[in-house]
Image (cartoon, rainbow, N blue to C red; front, side):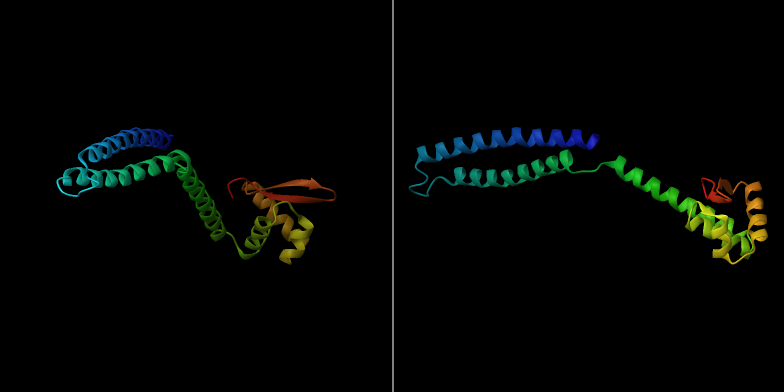
Length: 168
């Protein structure tokens, strides 16, 4: 939100300074006309140099205005960036947690847990065919996972659907 305030302030500042600058340039043009600077070029160097400086000032004011406009309307802000970084960190943390858990499992348990992660809500029957393990072995491993609070089973017809517990 600070960027929007700064953008509004810069835009307002640029508009006020531009108004003052253009009125000053108008007075310089009138003064140059009164002195006859546009007919003969002698003796009007001061007015010419002041007009050249005012052109440089217009460039700077335009830059300040553009920066203020950007901050006011187009800048995402720190909050959005911090939120995205936090989400990325949580995703990496969950992935590392899952990989650490896999290191503690044997090969059959790894097959089952990877299949569940690939397809949340997979049925025990499908799990049995996908992992190429017996019905008893799948049931035994899933019971162990439930005791360790890694998965939960819910009844689905004559079989169960298997879900990973949040955080894995």
